[in-house]
Image 1 (cartoon, rainbow, N blue to C red):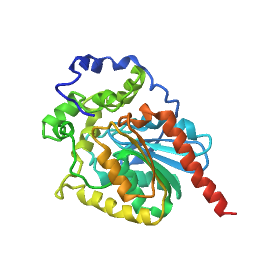
Image 2: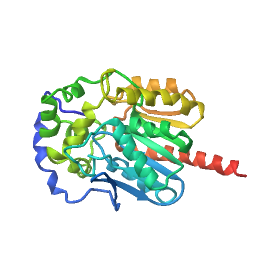
Image 3: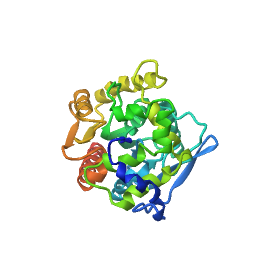
Image 4: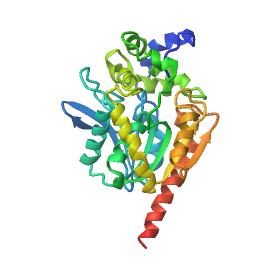
Length: 316
């Protein structure tokens, strides 16, 4: 998901041709904004019914869930957040882009919208953020579907991402060279993205200033106890046992060709939640919804309908 000096260098001219697409392809939604201090957080709020909250990671935005929104908005209320600094949200240069603040922002948005019960779909960094909310409010959570993510401590990190954490060099790679979001458009998939889709992913991150949160997410990976987000992540990890003991249903959906969140993380989720439903796509990448979107959405429909059927049955 990051720039590799030895890979695909011939594709660098694509960095300068993205403006030919004047709209976000296949994203027919009217966004809304929620104030976070002096800044605006963008989100989608579509449909009515049982609530599903979609939480993206880095370097994506709510665009990653565009087909999930389309599939569920006629039967559910679907909320998809753009974390501050991401997507169509404001991208302040002076903001503390840390795990705790992202969780706080999600919590504030859902409280503002009056959400007292919801299911969640989380991906990448959205796992730590979404599960961060879930362990704070387990009684509000119906079901969770997770894709290629972690919400527990690990020291595993690909060397490509390690490069992007280095002082000065990391900023140059991620913010000047677009060496995180742009390579993800071909490294995070096994099926090439259409040009319009790749351009839409990248368009919110079209400058040094607009890539501030992408770089901050990379720096915020807590690998050791001295990191400021380490204790927050450890608290989320401790709360996973409570979610398991409460019997909150999980479905683990996984792309087996993810070089970052590889099958070691998949196996760890299965160990922590042995009763979870699991679907492993051996030939799909990190952007699972791009590689296997229709299959994943069909699974999500069954997963969420099971929960609603159980709730209706319990009410007699």
